[in-house]
Image (cartoon, rainbow, N blue to C red; front, side, top):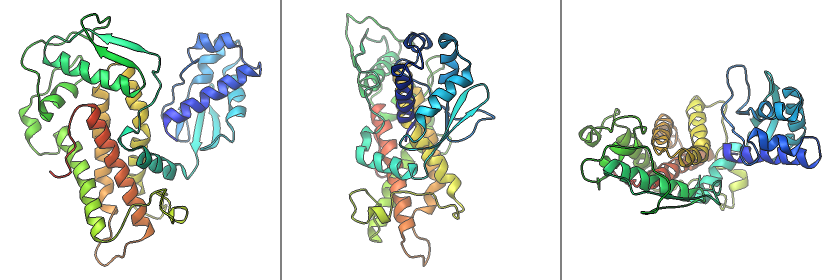
Length: 344
């Protein structure tokens, strides 16, 4: 279950409470949760995998104590698919612990959806036309924002009759046609200076573009090496899938911390894409790809058998997780208009 999935689950619980007359419909609109609920990692004092402050936001317009609203929602969230437990912490935060098979489901979903994983219809019905950007940075950022909006179901375009303009950006130099040039313009936030292109051509750990593309190339290399070992990733269309899930945590494995980091990054991907579209901020996608690449590079050495070790179901599971990471990296780069080479 991704943050976007969990957000929809909470939203359904809110609507159910309204339908049952437990929460007033006006309170939902006043609280700003009629169409979207924010889900984030638990704050200090919280617990579980994810948390939301929806009950706190609903409490005042509903004229109810926050913990009472949280109890109302928890009663309608217990037993929801993918959720193992719902706790109430602090003044009324809802904390979610996901089912242990969530990792398997997440990896299976990524492999099934491919590079469109994270695309959705959160902004369906939204129509935006941007004025053409003046200069290379404005042009590249505007075009990328259009791609992000379309990936979330919005109707977005660029035209002379546009009604929206992105934050003014420097209007000098030609529009870059290479990957390094695009990354130099997209990676910084709108208020930051563009990156220098030359360092982005050097293959070092300090180069975020290289790290992301190298991680993707490593995934492709692992898949090629696995094929030579007659080792394939566990997919849902595999007859042995039920006995050999795409990925399950192995508490005895010393590198589970790396798998957990990678799974968290992959699970965050849909929420990152949606936020980047809503905020017109492609730099969020670039930063998330860097975090995903770092998590994968810490995990990669566990994927294939070492020495005389024989391929096992665990290796098939890790290979599926690696393939899912490569899929997310390729999809994110594609939205930024940057290639994801299989060899570096």
